[in-house]
Every structure is written in structure tokens, then in C-alpha cells.
Length: 191
Image 1 (spheres, rainbow, N blue to C red):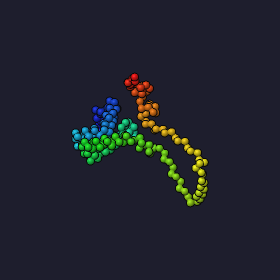
Image 2 (image 1 turned 45 degrees about the vertical axis):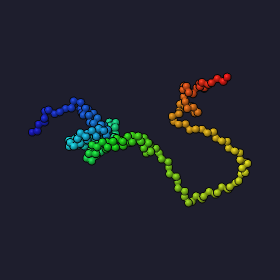
Image 3 (image 1 turned 180 degrees about the horizontal axis):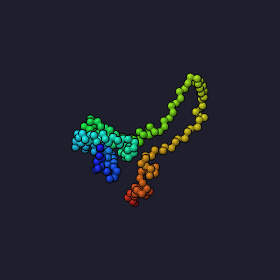
Image 4 (image 1 turned 90 degrees about the horizontal axis):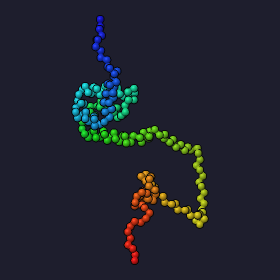
């Protein structure tokens, strides 16, 4: 006859604290400097820690991924499964490279995403041989004296985005003493 153990561990908060601790640790992996710290302190040489990183891959499942605020952590968690990446992150140059690549991703994320989201124009239809070409337009000569001269367009300088508050033609703001309408230079009086 099999007896059940009397002292079964019952988590007092139903795993909430464990969930939060694992979530926090996984999200810390989005920081290449923290991964470099782990490599420098030889955490990646501990087989138990490597097993823990494998265990944490459950955060990639849809029911858990909705709690992730820093999605790069999942990318780095995947890379940490590779021993070559773990060894490379011990070097400061690799940390800087990962940090730079992460920065460029953030910098260009919106533009790259818009390229894939925005609808693309439809391709031009290929002209088929069944459509006859248009007849050429006959040339007509108009005497030069019959054509009125075109008015010259007024030059309009393009404003820099930084000049929204400054009116065109003025390099100074209105409350700048240099832009007052009076001449403040001292002049010699003529006798």
C-alpha cells in the first residue's frame, strides 16, 4: 500500500512570486551589458544555470509572451542556448556589437515595419501587342512674337524645419534686441 507524503509543499501565493521573479530575470536578458556581466562572472560555465536558461524558453509560448515588455529578451534567450554566443559575450567587443545592433534595430524599427505594413502600389500592366500605338502628334510652328512671355516666379526659399517659429526673412526672433527697427549705433554729429 502506497502512502502519500504528509508534508507537501504548498506555495502560499500560488506561484505568483516565482512567476514575477522569472519574468524579471528573462527581461533582464534584453540588456547585452547584463549578459556580459553573467559571462564575466562565469555563470555560463555552470550546467545548472544552462539548464535554467533552457527551462526559461517556455516564455516564448503565446500564453506567457503577452507579459513580456522587452521582446529582445526572447531573442537573446534563444541566442544563449548556443555555447559559442555565451563564450563570445564574455568579450567587451561582442557586448558593444550586440548593444549597437540593438540600438540600430530600435532606431529603424518604425521605418522597417512601415515598409512591410503599408500597401504597395500595384504593378503597371504590361502593354499587350493587340493595342495599336497612338498616332504621332503633328508639329505646329508658332511664331515667337505670338507667345506672351511667362512671368518670372518669385523666389521662395525653402524653410528649414527648425524655422517654424521664425518668420521668413528674419534670422532673429521678435524679442531679440538685434532685430529692433531703430539703428542704435552712435553716429558722429555733422557740424
